[in-house]
Amino acid sequence: MQAREQDYFRAFVSVSKAISSTLNLQEVLDLILKYAIQSIDLKAGAISLWNMKENRLQLIAQRNLSKEFLDKGPIAADKSMPGAIFNKRPAVVPDVKSDTQLQYPDACLKEGIHSILSVPILFRDNVIGVLRLYDTKPREFTYREVEFISAMADQGGIAIENARYMEKVMKDHKKEVAELTDWFDAMAKGTMLDG
Image (tube, rainbow, N blue to C red; front, side):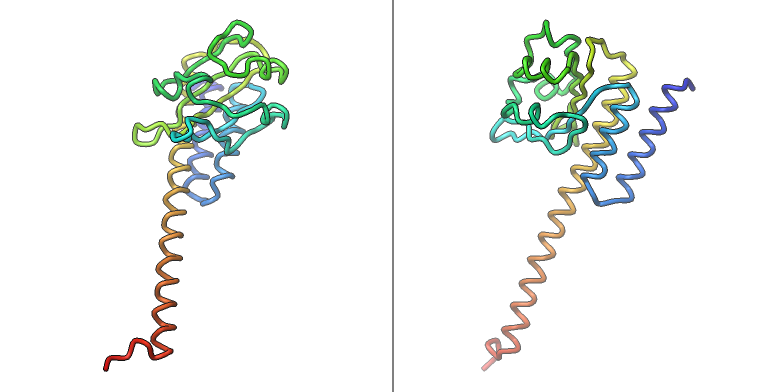
């Protein structure tokens, strides 16, 4: 196994362990971004969820991006590298200066971003978001790099759905506890006596 592939493997294992050992979604997403950026030597990255109702990408994690770049405006899913979401396939902008699929190319250039890899985050074959990685120079991404980042995005999908599931379980649990508490209070006050 080549050194680069060993790095990919170690990163994948670390993220897998984090998913199985913590309920802290932010910690897992930050780890995914850290390894994705380090493993293929990039500037920055972001993970966004797809709000289908509003057709927007909602940022939930980022690494090494300025506040100014993050505040550039809402990102429309159909106006910024839409292939990653609507085709369920990685989309690449090898050179921001000569690309037409970006919503904010000037903001990218001002941030020092010259190439972008956008990978869909899937869960059960449904797109739930995107993992975007940014480089300071124009570049093509190799098949292996895209494959590795796609695997990391899949891990992100698992972590996001685990967090959503746990949130639902906790919400349901709180509701059940509240209902039981109300029932016990009513019993204690004698309002539920028969006859």
